[in-house]
Image (cartoon, helix red, strand yellow):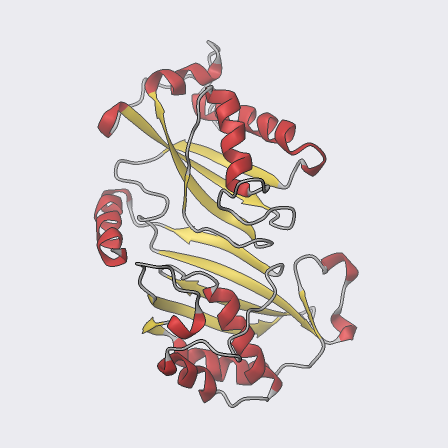
Length: 296
């Protein structure tokens, strides 16, 4: 990474610079991503660290909010700073402000986390291209979910990121059922709807593969996800993998558009946000405007 001081950045609308942070976190110690009074959350911890550095409250916008216990390797957020705030991050040194913020935010996070230092790591800081919105510019989000289906696969070192499932699962049945849910669908049966929000999403990937270690990894990718959607999809698929329900049952539930006693959520701790994808720089603004229109 270049440590030389760059030319003054070009200001965006409103006189602010939009800054992108790429980060990862262990969701175990946190009550989810979003701010909650009296609870330790990823957003709250990150914003407290930023406030310590910028010396004012700083609100971040996230690509995908995660539930309590859910992890992330490829989370993305944005925040807005004034030019003076950005250029002042290096404290007068001949240092790229992006490098300065990366170094200082790591220190501020360590100070805020204490014994939990390392639970949140910022990997990259950059000036976002014009039109970038961490949430609305995203093309898709990809999650993984690890399942050890039988005591022989239960590794104590992986118990914090792998589901220990007692019953053997048939990967072929899992994939036969999951493929029927792909496409633009109303996922009301597989999510907890929020008032005023749509439950229509484009599920682009929903597949299961057994690795060389014997552990099954589910890959779930969509343009966006409703609340609890990934955990509901995996939780329902387990019925099919066990042979309790036929593969077509997943699609039948989708068409029913209802939540009932069979609407189960898989445990959160094996779920990881792996990647968020964005279009080319010249398409960021158009993508954000289109997504806002669809969500509203």
